[in-house]
Image (cartoon, rainbow, N blue to C red; front, side, top):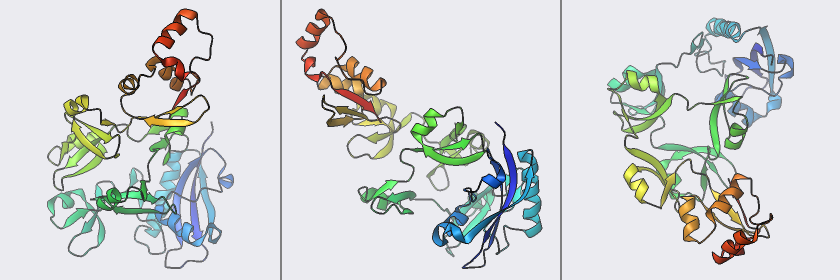
Length: 341
């Protein structure tokens, strides 16, 4: 499949502050002039478009190239020409470099003395006592009532679980191999298009920042090169959620094996329906134990959800098998089905 690589400029026709332009690079599977819906991946520009309306912004194709590398070189050249990272007329926060954005080796922090939000070298971050990581104790959520996305403290989120849902619930961050862009998509779409999308978790791990005692997600390489700064978070442990409260935490593997109250955070939910298609209940713990405890046919329900909700015992069954099903009391589940979500 052919890819098109180009450098573009976004112009705010009715700016409400000093910012007016954005310079970016893009790879797409359609011709640049047809790629009209894409208006950059900058969260700052997206916010401005959302607030002012897309009709106040225009997109100009500056140049096209046969390779992504050549397009990025042109972007770097323009960024340096206008110094977009510091130029108040641009939405760009950083100058691009041939190896990527110049935030490499930097970390976004809050100066606890002045309250300023800064990008500082990781070396300065670790050696200073006045910097706090910008995401410490915070989580990005969506208000269920109005769909507004915001960042709140972890305490507020857990105290108001009925009000908020985590923004990434049911989604996964991936790299689109067709466009080289990073985005979030629903898990189902990811599994149905594994040849196109690559999980951004590849080569990543969870670690604990020894300085702040907070959990961070970093590359395996960065972890190995900075063992004095990071420690592993899951040695002998597993991240789980409580089947009733939904609380997420780390427990030892031994505790996990002994408990029926926790499941891994990646566990799927199985929903059960009767012969009339009426929802009965759900379960996301160990399915075998749950079905056995309820005197429900383990194998039959597993076949059902593995086959997208095929109904139990509707196909022809020989007399001896049906006698056994009846003796176990499983005949009452005829026509029932289960779906994994």
